[in-house]
Length: 223
Length: 275
Image (cartoon, rainbow over all chains, first blue to last red; front, side, top):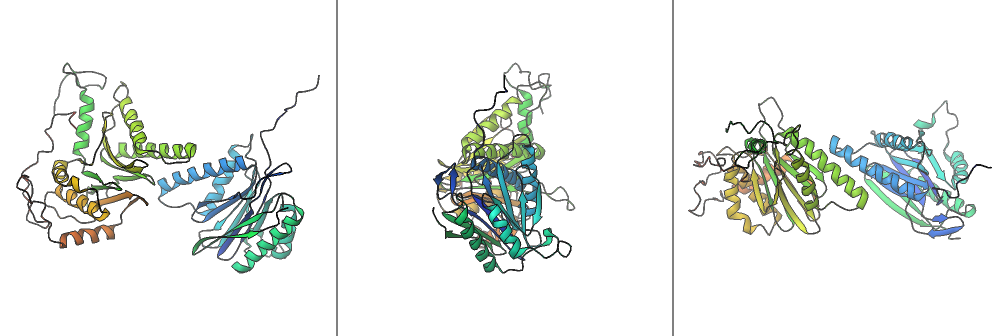
């Protein structure tokens, strides 16, 4: 008598890739807009990015139903924070909130792989990267999702500081200018699209800086 | 006031069919400093008098943002008001979370009224000692409601609560038919109504708070400079003597000193349950 196994899973993977890069006074957060299931495409035009606060933008790949639920919870929590403190949450505060929210469901996790980007209290770019249960770290750049294995080594090559002793990852902001960082992101996605079947269609790029928030789109291969 | 044997707890009726504890709670509202609300087709303005208890202290917050489309002004026990505002905010957040749309104002006030009613029917509770003017916008237009400690609520075109609110109500009764139009006029009327409750004291932005919500305009409290600018503007434009008609006993035209001899301290004295 073998143990009965579940014949369905509460999770599905809708694919997709997210990237974020922190600059001296800006932050670039990008994600493709393809939503898949199995070998099929559900839509070519789905945004994985949400602005949670003035200076915090989150991109999440994984199971989009869980991603959406997570976004709603964070949005509601941010409203409560605003009522209580009369101001917007800072990016580091939002980072901690996201971590706690994820760990809250440690034993039935949100199947979401998140990258949080924004400006810290000093106006410098910051990027926080997470696993599904809330373990997080501030870094200078990060990538999550189906194309991450293709993009991360490339970003390491372009952006990683030569030694962690000289400049620890969490203080690293790229010396690149904003437009150079955007070009780098476009290159990442164009390359990932070539080899990852779950990445493609369009990339949505959100740029956060002192003057506010801005969005750009770039077409990607649709196959 | 009425000290008698049926007022010890809220679950005791008097022979005349009154719940004295509830009526006493409404007295608490009348003792609070004035709060005023008025609405047009597209906007709702809430205004209140903010008197600090001493020069050294800050004044109490009496207007609360509940959501982008709803705000409340309170009179009475401000602590109760604060707690109820937190409840209202939570209800709006939960509704938004579930339905991804804004909670209609009429629904919110019913929930609030039901919550107040519970406290009138439990022996271990007491009624909330605060009256709330709930102003908001939803698909059916702009709304202003008054929720009282008894658990009753009413919709109004304009209303005033708290001490010396009768003076403001009299002013509003004459003016409310013109409330269909401009946002600036609505704020002006709110300021004039507020001035009525001050009994001749000078109206400045340091003793009042104004908040507005409207079509395309999220609920927000106007900052001090804006309010002072508006006060100056409206006072310069001739003391728009509110005393045009002879009918009203309590107007004298000057905004400035010259103690407006408002002969009517008669905002109380109405029979309870009358609000």
